[in-house]
Image 1 (cartoon, rainbow, N blue to C red):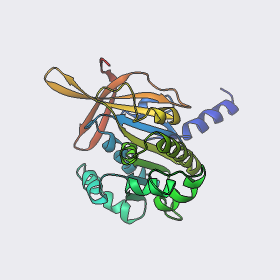
Image 2: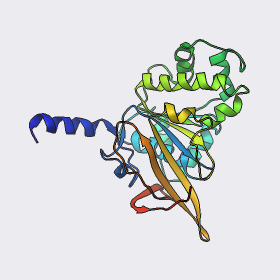
Image 3: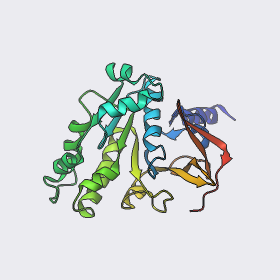
Image 4: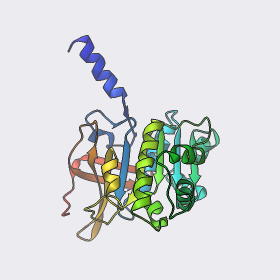
Length: 259
């Protein structure tokens, strides 16, 4: 390998987001998620979607990165309590400004975008209207979590037209920030579609699917990197465990799921 090739390899390795979750980053050839990607985190109830995203945030604020967690359902207090239950000193990083947790009403998002839930808006409005609401001035997050997109579509009475426009603008907004974004979506326990409308999975750069499947008399957690642009990754479903300290992934333990 010549000097130029070596420099390219090093640059590529530095251009990924290492989540710090045991076993998860090993599923990627370059050791992490490409920086700036928008990633759907999909799965049924109780699969660990929120835990995964909160753990990523916590691991990265430990490394000095700024993270923002936007919730459309749970309060800030409940999110902090959930994180503390895994032994994470979340309050320290909220207080020092590294971790921003916001609770936002999805109806407010839709009203700000469209004027009314059934109204319409221009294709550029969201860049001006949603950013001041979600990202405070002078706060430049490297990681953004949205929990969850399902709450937004549930709040919309005109799901097709408005939600499609909203999603296109939202993904464009995340791309402009340069942050790596994680957008949680609720699915069936064994999904054949990985978002509420199917639009999200085409707009997203990546899809991470979490499972909680019945195996004999017990349930088994598993995880899969279904899609990830700009990255080679393992194309298999592997075992995952939710422990008292957070999520652990076992890249060498394959899980067979009949989808």
